[in-house]
Length: 255
Ligand SMILES: [Zn+2]
Image (cartoon, rainbow, N blue to C red; front, side, top):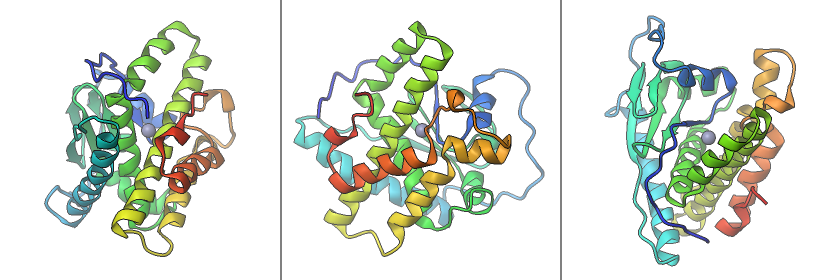
């Protein structure tokens, strides 16, 4: 694994797991505060859903501590913020509809518990492991931040067209999926944390947040040039690649 310098990351872009409509809401930033629906709060850091998030996050730390140590580096864990309504971040204002995301500026993973409920209803991705995959994917972006990949991609995006920038973002997302697969591999082989059906839950979740799946659902047709996360098939493929090999060297989506 080629681990570059940590350095200061100036990227002001957040990386999402969700579709284009989710991206817009944060990128527009600064505008009117998003309206949240009248809804009883159903998830906080201290309840069961919050405890689950912390547990998975802790497990990803076991994995990445080890991998970084093997590369002679110390892993610096991401911070966690759990929210169920709008939240202000170093990457801008996020609405509750934004979904989980990672903000490189404050090295924080923001987990939107409302999205976890959505995963089961709108995305039809059931089970704890679907949520675990989402968390591990966001940590994948944190790894990309620590290794300097996000910074490089951010710079490259400034030089290209919007289509080029989208294509680069797809590679970023697929690599985060591959890193999530690496966590699943290590969690299973080192700590026996996976049960029968878990990997299928993750693969179903990966497909459900594929750009083609989301576009078909939201706009009724698929426009490949606007993809920012990769197709369902690509997302499954890269998660599975990381899961099968367990090696970061097999996660080079930029080749
Ligand atoms: Zn992502």
